[in-house]
Image (cartoon, rainbow, N blue to C red):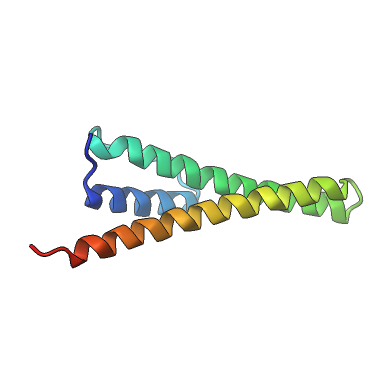
Length: 104
C-alpha cells in the first residue's frame, strides 16, 4: 500500500495540532493515509502523556511522595519519547526535501 507524501505531511500536521490543542480526534478519512495518520496521532499522544507523567512524578518528588528512581525513570521515558518524535519529524522533513529535489 503506497502512501502519498502529501497525505503523510497533512496527517502529521493535523495530529500535531490536535494533540497540542487537546482536541478530540477528528474523523479520519478512510483511505491510504488513515493508518499513518492514526499511527502519528497515537505516537504524539503517547509522547505527550509521558511528558505529563514525568512532570507529575517530579512534583511528587518535590513534595517528598516519590522516590528518585521513579523520577529518573519517568524523565528518561519522556526524553526517549521526545527524541523519537523529533527523529520522525526530521525524517519526514528530509524525505520531503528529497522529493522536492526530484526532477519532474
